[in-house]
Length: 175
Image (cartoon, rainbow, N blue to C red; front, side):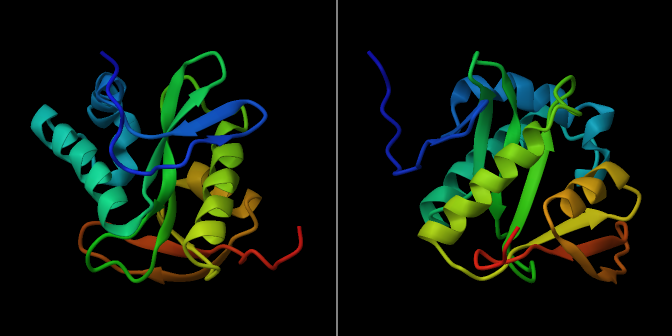
């Protein structure tokens, strides 16, 4: 029996990627990422139960807001990360965010998926520009935000680590 996902999450296709709904099968890769040094800029390593809760929270985010993190895979089926728009409690605005898994960076996947997720958000939810909140030392994410056309607006001082807020151009901006 095949399980049908109960929420209307769009499936997006790019030249090399598929952005799809979260699946239970994604959990292992999420756990590996969340317990690795790659999680440094999203609060650090977390244990298995919190990774599971994060996975469920993303599904809840889709149910509550109609958008969230897409699970991103290559056309050959490699699960390479989660990219999408999220808006958590006490955040200033919806954020275009990305978590690319080990071994898949440096190939343009994050930019390709982020542009698709952003276009979907603007087409279905809101035309308002999005932000990205990037830890000050995270120079790779900062480079991606700049590649996507975002500009740094300000730096927020936070006891858990300072971060920059980047503003992405809205859908009417020309490339």
